[in-house]
Length: 147
Image 1 (tube, one colour):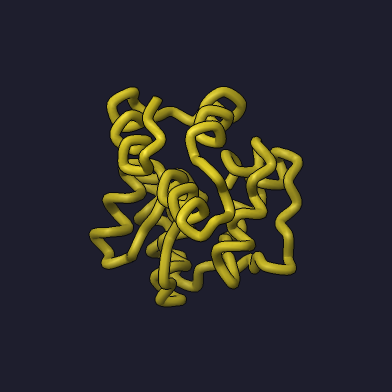
Image 2 (cartoon, helix red, strand yellow):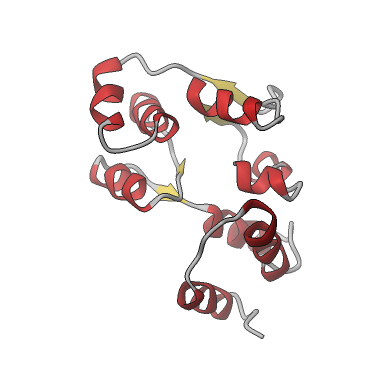
């Protein structure tokens, strides 16, 4: 979410999904970075299973741990997670996941973005999003956007 907010594209989430549920740790991270969660489409939900959160925090940062626990409790349709370990643990728990690249591709397929390359490059420059050169190339080729 921070990556999208850094390039003023957080609104894509509102346009793509009817509701975004975020745990308190993610809400706090957004606020620390000067971004107030838009409660018109975001809802802050605390995980009931604190043991699950504690177990996940042994391997993940607090936001990802809480997000996975909340997604499991709510039987979420989709979890937005980019960090490799978080993606692996989420899928191991049976969660459907997407990441920043998936959000951008979905936005393009729905006509919300003309192309993803410039947005991705802005996120890399402005937010420090890391993506390997090979993955960037394969991703842009899959969208018919490779230079």
